[in-house]
Length: 339
Figure 1 (spheres, helix red, strand yellow):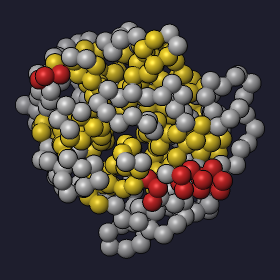
Figure 2 (spheres, one colour):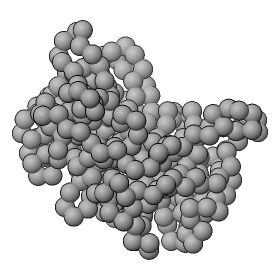
Figure 3 (cartoon, helix red, strand yellow):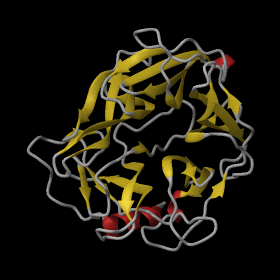
Figure 4 (tube, helix red, strand yellow):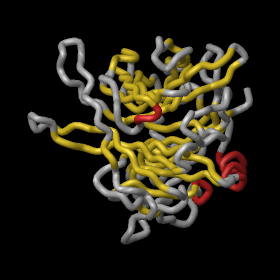
């Protein structure tokens, strides 16, 4: 990982002037696009989505949606314009997208929480959470068949089923909480730790806000005690592009069952976005579509440092710095910047 950080910081993190007059609670410096996921049959870059990174044995292991399934890499293999690399597809089929990976201490197994599609009684396509396990995080062939988690769909204010997605779990004592999102809403369900991965309660509304999708929820130790932080993809008007763009906001709570209150939620003062990221490469399309902070801990409690120093994400970027260049989804890394 040292090589990656040196490469990102030394070669690509050209710092610009601070954005706007409002003081920033966080500032990030953004790497160039890390394109070089190659397709299986040629050397062309391929799309890579929804990255999740977990640390084990001093290495950062990256899981993401790729060509035909969930792919595995080591993060330090990525270079901005280096040689093409090919990840390894995980052994399960039929889902697992938008992965969350952590080490489950009691079972001594790695867990991958993802989503799988199914049709409801009316034939409408829905997403459900699912689980795969593995003894070795670095073994892409060792993941078990996906187990669907049996949880009812959330219902909106009119009593209608709300299709949700992008599931994320966090263990807290004798309970496991799972969050999922639908347009404008964050939902929460829970089960007993002893009953996981089944036994879920009916989902309840945790937060109604400017939510696009994909919450990531963590436990943090602060000078005032424990708090919980969730990062969520949001959308706002970008003054430069004159279009709505996605970025990452944060909400905090003293308990996982809420209430959740705004933390960094504005375009010009977000958790991560073009309002507080110093950009060295104009190929980026001014969005941070999906991502998560890199945490030193790797277990099911989802413990995150009070001030995380790195953030991995995917966004759209041009392959070349030319007007007519093709645009694909690719990986980038943000490094916390000194003010």
